[in-house]
Image (tube, rainbow, N blue to C red; front, top):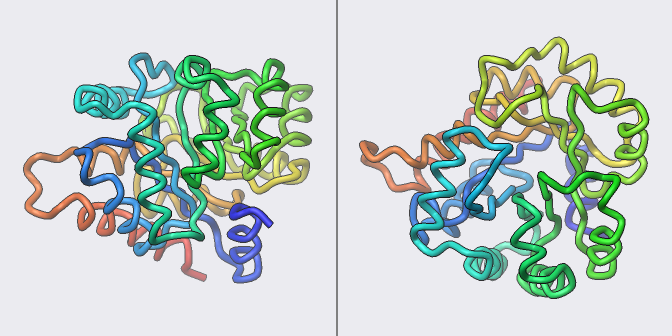
Length: 268
């Protein structure tokens, strides 16, 4: 049983929803990433999405774009990201870790070599924002050979035909983008419209469905979790970690940010 299967089975048995924070590897510093990951787990994270810094993150808004730029300037390349996961695994063998990023670094590394290295490091899944499902067969086959889940995206504009494909091929969890746009645009979040779409998707999907984009606090997390198996919070957390005026360390800030969301999701 994969870490995804184990974690979501535990959540279903407890009647709980998954809380999935996203952070950019290498931001706010190279040394902070692993301690922040552990702090997030202690504060209630069920899965961690670890952003692979990329020079042209076209699906991301300004907050994550700037985070990626800062991380790259510090030298946070793919090898660093895999080293981070391996270090995290020394003290946490249970929490699923997803690498979230773009296809270019995988192609440069070579999909086979990337999958082998990711597996050795302890990665459970990979979400490649710019890999269309119609073109994913070869990558999925390589990942499957190494036990890596290829996490796919669905959105409000996904056609019925493509959605049926995504629901049938979903691995780990299916990431539902709550609105058409880039990350961080929380003012565009319409929980009612997203809820209608999520209910239809969950009825078809072979894997849990997690909703992301626009979730910024406990209230929005709780509202989106009603019709999803879990929620993803990214830009708001990345922004909190990037604060330069905060007296607390990044792990303390990460835990303080996430704990209210965990509490909101667990309220009856």
